[in-house]
Length: 112
Image (tube, rainbow, N blue to C red):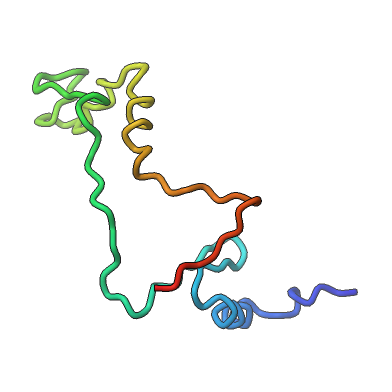
């Protein structure tokens, strides 16, 4: 029995996927295509603030070899992280994370 997908061109698979998956992301190979949401010109994007000074605090003085906001190396945060910085960042971003999918809980698309 031959593979039916070996005989179909990528363009044809793309058209089939567009018709079958008109309201969600679909894949062809390793490329993921996201269809824009039609009908709503503005999406509700939450205002996510940057990380607070408890995660990383950058002083005005150079913190490394040529690293400050006013020198050639514009990323002085690299030299300001300590062993707890990433943990503090995870704690701050926890409230903005999406719920992880589960096999045990079915997903139903919310119609708006």
